[in-house]
Length: 167
Image (cartoon, rainbow, N blue to C red; front, side, top):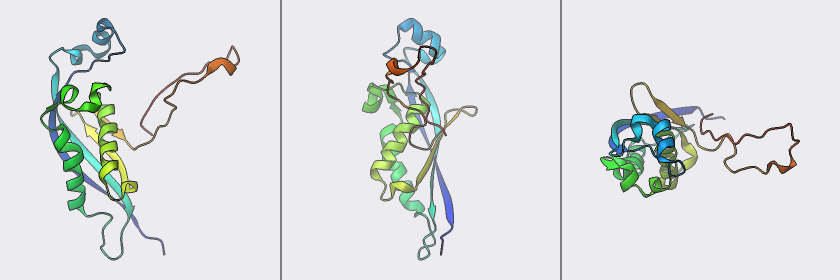
Protein backbone atom coordinates (compact mmCIF):
# COMPACT_ATOMS: atom_id res chain seq x y z
CA UNK A 1 0.00 0.00 0.00
CA UNK A 2 1.37 3.39 -1.01
CA UNK A 3 1.86 5.87 1.78
CA UNK A 4 0.53 9.42 1.45
CA UNK A 5 3.18 12.06 0.66
CA UNK A 6 3.00 15.24 2.74
CA UNK A 7 5.12 18.41 2.94
CA UNK A 8 6.02 20.15 6.19
CA UNK A 9 7.43 23.69 6.24
CA UNK A 10 9.09 25.43 9.17
CA UNK A 11 9.89 29.14 9.28
CA UNK A 12 12.78 30.87 11.01
CA UNK A 13 14.08 34.43 10.85
CA UNK A 14 17.61 35.68 11.27
CA UNK A 15 19.51 38.93 10.82
CA UNK A 16 22.79 39.17 8.94
CA UNK A 17 24.79 41.69 7.02
CA UNK A 18 26.85 41.28 3.88
CA UNK A 19 28.33 43.05 0.90
CA UNK A 20 27.69 41.91 -2.65
CA UNK A 21 31.16 41.92 -4.15
CA UNK A 22 32.75 39.42 -6.52
CA UNK A 23 36.51 38.94 -6.41
CA UNK A 24 36.25 37.98 -10.10
CA UNK A 25 35.14 41.49 -11.08
CA UNK A 26 36.81 44.88 -10.91
CA UNK A 27 35.62 47.44 -8.38
CA UNK A 28 33.95 49.32 -11.24
CA UNK A 29 32.15 46.17 -12.45
CA UNK A 30 31.04 45.34 -8.90
CA UNK A 31 29.62 48.83 -8.41
CA UNK A 32 27.79 48.66 -11.73
CA UNK A 33 26.42 45.14 -11.12
CA UNK A 34 25.48 45.32 -7.43
CA UNK A 35 24.77 49.05 -7.02
CA UNK A 36 24.07 50.11 -3.43
CA UNK A 37 24.45 46.50 -2.29
CA UNK A 38 28.18 46.85 -3.05
CA UNK A 39 28.57 49.44 -0.28
CA UNK A 40 32.04 48.79 1.25
CA UNK A 41 30.46 48.89 4.72
CA UNK A 42 27.83 46.32 3.75
CA UNK A 43 24.11 46.29 4.46
CA UNK A 44 21.76 44.04 6.43
CA UNK A 45 18.63 41.96 6.08
CA UNK A 46 16.11 40.32 8.33
CA UNK A 47 15.91 37.07 6.39
CA UNK A 48 12.96 34.71 6.59
CA UNK A 49 13.82 31.10 5.79
CA UNK A 50 11.23 28.44 5.03
CA UNK A 51 12.54 24.88 5.01
CA UNK A 52 10.25 22.24 3.54
CA UNK A 53 10.61 18.51 3.99
CA UNK A 54 8.50 16.13 1.93
CA UNK A 55 7.94 12.43 2.22
CA UNK A 56 5.66 9.57 3.19
CA UNK A 57 3.65 9.75 6.39
CA UNK A 58 4.94 7.01 8.69
CA UNK A 59 1.91 4.87 9.66
CA UNK A 60 3.28 4.32 13.18
CA UNK A 61 4.12 7.94 14.07
CA UNK A 62 1.73 9.78 11.77
CA UNK A 63 4.60 12.09 10.78
CA UNK A 64 6.90 12.71 7.84
CA UNK A 65 9.41 14.11 10.34
CA UNK A 66 9.14 15.25 13.90
CA UNK A 67 8.86 19.04 13.71
CA UNK A 68 11.03 19.28 16.82
CA UNK A 69 13.83 17.55 14.86
CA UNK A 70 13.38 19.97 11.95
CA UNK A 71 13.59 22.87 14.41
CA UNK A 72 16.88 21.48 15.79
CA UNK A 73 18.33 20.99 12.29
CA UNK A 74 17.47 24.58 11.41
CA UNK A 75 19.02 25.82 14.65
CA UNK A 76 22.33 24.13 13.81
CA UNK A 77 22.36 24.78 10.04
CA UNK A 78 20.91 28.31 9.97
CA UNK A 79 20.66 30.11 13.28
CA UNK A 80 24.03 29.24 14.79
CA UNK A 81 26.23 30.01 11.77
CA UNK A 82 24.21 32.93 10.30
CA UNK A 83 22.18 34.87 12.87
CA UNK A 84 23.69 38.26 13.75
CA UNK A 85 26.75 37.56 11.62
CA UNK A 86 28.58 39.31 8.84
CA UNK A 87 28.24 36.64 6.16
CA UNK A 88 31.40 37.69 4.33
CA UNK A 89 33.60 37.85 7.42
CA UNK A 90 32.12 35.32 9.85
CA UNK A 91 31.05 32.45 7.59
CA UNK A 92 34.02 30.70 5.94
CA UNK A 93 31.89 29.53 2.97
CA UNK A 94 31.37 33.14 1.86
CA UNK A 95 35.05 34.01 1.81
CA UNK A 96 35.19 32.35 -1.64
CA UNK A 97 31.53 32.68 -2.70
CA UNK A 98 29.55 35.90 -3.29
CA UNK A 99 26.97 36.21 -0.51
CA UNK A 100 23.92 36.53 -2.76
CA UNK A 101 20.63 35.14 -1.53
CA UNK A 102 20.93 32.40 -4.16
CA UNK A 103 24.24 31.28 -2.67
CA UNK A 104 22.82 31.63 0.84
CA UNK A 105 20.03 29.20 -0.08
CA UNK A 106 22.60 26.73 -1.45
CA UNK A 107 24.67 27.07 1.74
CA UNK A 108 21.64 26.39 3.95
CA UNK A 109 20.62 23.39 1.81
CA UNK A 110 24.12 21.92 2.04
CA UNK A 111 24.31 22.49 5.80
CA UNK A 112 20.95 20.79 6.34
CA UNK A 113 21.90 17.86 4.11
CA UNK A 114 25.01 17.25 6.24
CA UNK A 115 23.16 16.95 9.54
CA UNK A 116 19.72 15.51 8.78
CA UNK A 117 19.09 11.86 9.64
CA UNK A 118 17.08 11.54 6.42
CA UNK A 119 18.46 14.19 4.03
CA UNK A 120 16.39 12.75 1.19
CA UNK A 121 13.34 14.36 2.85
CA UNK A 122 14.70 17.88 2.29
CA UNK A 123 12.55 19.33 -0.47
CA UNK A 124 13.03 23.10 -0.54
CA UNK A 125 14.80 26.06 1.02
CA UNK A 126 13.03 29.35 0.43
CA UNK A 127 14.50 32.65 1.57
CA UNK A 128 12.59 35.91 1.73
CA UNK A 129 15.37 38.50 1.59
CA UNK A 130 12.86 41.34 1.49
CA UNK A 131 9.10 41.49 1.14
CA UNK A 132 9.60 41.63 -2.62
CA UNK A 133 12.60 39.33 -3.21
CA UNK A 134 12.37 35.58 -2.65
CA UNK A 135 14.75 32.79 -3.62
CA UNK A 136 13.90 29.08 -3.83
CA UNK A 137 16.41 26.22 -4.01
CA UNK A 138 15.53 22.56 -4.35
CA UNK A 139 18.99 21.06 -4.64
CA UNK A 140 20.95 19.90 -7.63
CA UNK A 141 21.91 21.75 -10.76
CA UNK A 142 19.72 22.38 -13.74
CA UNK A 143 22.58 23.55 -15.93
CA UNK A 144 26.22 22.50 -16.08
CA UNK A 145 28.51 24.57 -13.89
CA UNK A 146 31.81 23.58 -15.49
CA UNK A 147 33.11 25.17 -18.65
CA UNK A 148 32.46 23.10 -21.71
CA UNK A 149 35.01 22.25 -24.35
CA UNK A 150 33.59 24.09 -27.35
CA UNK A 151 36.25 22.89 -29.78
CA UNK A 152 34.00 20.15 -31.15
CA UNK A 153 31.12 22.51 -31.89
CA UNK A 154 30.35 23.58 -35.42
CA UNK A 155 31.55 27.19 -35.93
CA UNK A 156 27.94 28.40 -36.26
CA UNK A 157 26.82 26.73 -33.05
CA UNK A 158 27.19 28.54 -29.78
CA UNK A 159 27.43 27.02 -26.33
CA UNK A 160 26.44 29.11 -23.33
CA UNK A 161 27.46 28.26 -19.79
CA UNK A 162 24.47 29.18 -17.67
CA UNK A 163 24.17 28.27 -14.02
CA UNK A 164 20.78 28.18 -12.33
CA UNK A 165 19.67 26.56 -9.15
CA UNK A 166 15.93 26.79 -9.59
CA UNK A 167 13.73 24.29 -11.33
